[in-house]
Amino acid sequence: MTPGAAAVSVASSHARDRWVFLLLPLLVLPVPFLVNRYIQYVLNLILVYVLVGVGFNIVIGNLGQLAFANVALFGLGAYASGILVVHAGWPWWTTIIPAGLIGALAGILASLPALRRIRLFYLAIMTMAFGELLRWIYIRAEPLTNGSMGLAVPPPMLLGIRLQSDRSKFYVFLVLVVVMVLLTSRLLRSRFGRAFMAIRDNELAAAAMGIATDRYFVLAFAWSGFVVGVAGSMYTALVGHVTPEAFNLLELILHFAIVMVGGLASLAGSVIGAIVLTTTPELFRSFPGVQELMLSLLIIGVLLFLPRGLVSLLARRWPLFHERYYRE
Amino acid sequence: MALLELDSVTVQFGGLTAVAGVSLSVEPGQVRAIIGPNGAGKTTLFNAITGHAALASGAIRFRDERIDRLAPDVVSAKGVRRTFQNGGLFGELTALENVLAGLHTQVPTGLFGVLCGLPPARAAERAATARARELLELMGIGHLADQPARALSGGQQRMVEIVRALATRPPLLLLDEPAVGLAPAVREQLLGVIRRLVREDVMTVSDRIVVLNNGKVIADGTPADVPRNRHVLEAYLGH
Image 1: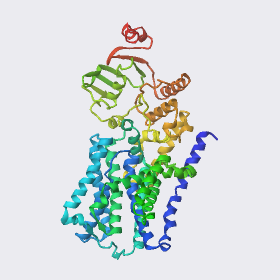
Image 2: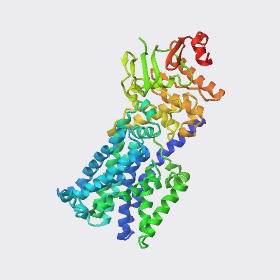
Image 3: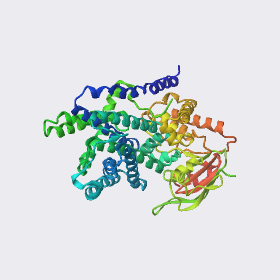
Image 4: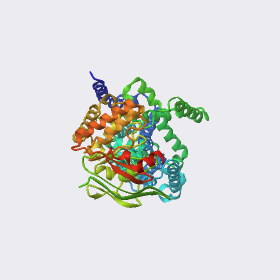
């Protein structure tokens, strides 16, 4: 057998093995019946942050842009959902897609400086300012947002059913997460996702391959915004109370850490990052002050020894976690 | 009809004139070498042709169509492909993914088909992947397909980049310093690849060499004439 043929067989076995990932959601199905209400709440929070990480990773990991509008997209999704439920009287489930679309629109807005060839630190500070500007708007747009007091949102409705318990929310969230992760995986492993990464690695060469770079900037930011907007809508359904304080710079650091600790440009990494960074503070909830310490040590420790995130630890053992961006 | 026609092309950066009124034409099937000392304006000339550098004056026509105001991706889609002097591979992508990115405009999948995982989109992706693999095999570097580009040696990277540029069978291929910095053995291998391409894709080969110095064409002739040209000797030997 030639070395080339060997490579083919290895790669195609990976493509087959990826179906294992679809079994994971099935495995967690019975979990809500095994845990108490507090752990259930944390699990729901993990699901919200999985999408937060998956969306953010597209822009910073796959497109490789230092764009930090993620907390703005998250907040807009959360507020869009809350405002439509409270002021327009829409049932929560009908606000999921509008929240995603508002997030996508904000994502496109955040990509505009990038289209004007603004990159790196300049793009970073401008997109962070965008997030802070929105926080100011949440506080000032009192008739809509109830200002700094925050917007109280009634329990979410799904097709006429009230999702009162966190257990019922878990199943709805799980479906949303599976759908969004599946769609994102398809996008990234197509010519579109390859275009994102080509731009990240060498923008001039990407254009020389016929890749319309501007179009893919907009697409990456819009899809990222959609995913994070949906996460915002889930957040509203979970906590039932949306405040401007929830979308501050500390929250942005958490989003950033989820992506970095999990693994840049890795879908599986976003999931792992969300699990680890949501769980860690909760483990130390009864020790005030220790939470922040452990979180900081975790971020520093992981990135010092595993610059490609926790997912690289798994990839060492199971080649399945090496993400391949083509089909065989 | 000339494939590519440059008509007094001038490129300026601030006060510096990098390319000064260069006129030349390339016929279909012709191999043209552009040589000149460091800083002569070779790469800038390439950048002007591919839309990466704006012209101060002059015109560039590809198949009788003006391309000098077009964006690089549009120029590329028309059939002008290039390699980069300092390595233009996508470092984190594998050799195979690099070639797939080269095929970008030829994978007929839409966003909707991709998101829904429709069979035509899947089939198009699989066909492109098979084609990319085949191209790498043809050049004798099939065994590198699944290596990340950044892990390849200089010569291997150069070959993957040429395969990537050729993936769409472009009518015009611009190779920027394809052999510089390579060990003699690797250079021979690379030249072999280029010769094979020329023999496969080109009907008649009439080699001509253009010599640039200080942004100007100082000689244009056959490989036999050029080394005897007085201006060329001056440019290289500094007489």
